[in-house]
Image (spheres, helix red, strand yellow):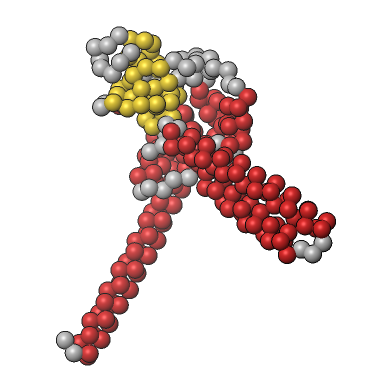
Length: 266
């Protein structure tokens, strides 16, 4: 192949890449426009009291892979108005996973939970559990990582300032500050590790079956421990074949068929 032919091959390759990128951009624009239209159509249907139509439009948006707290909040409202408690709670919970400060979702979740049958008294929480749930877990582990990186740079900068400072008073201040910030670095790093461990192991789910038997072991022939009803939130702690081992708020555990619940974290 001569140089002339090589240049032609490069030219064709550039054109193919341009067409491919252009096609992706156009597809993305059309997808976004279609999702937005379906979302607005769902909102209009909801305002007009057509809740089933609103649900269908919102589900169409969800199937495209789009997710947002407002979308899930609207879906929770539409299911609630349709007297479908389990999916209503499910989508309010999903909205809060994306935005824990979504006050409307939290308030409406409370209303939806009042329509459930199961009344489960949660176990009392220790001081450290309260710290974890109010301070550590609400911040993503990525955010904790960034805080740790910033503190590491600040600590290093203060130590450099200590090393090059000519005044003993400043050297003492820089030295102490450097080690204080270093301590905060290790503290936030440990918080990030704890937050990541919690995120990876936290598997909440909502019961979608009208009534389901919780077994002592995986298998339909095993003894029944207790019964749960639709809308109850559980924590999945283990899996075996088609069964989930779940824990409820009062600490009770048991096994339940996977198709009776829906995981909140897909």
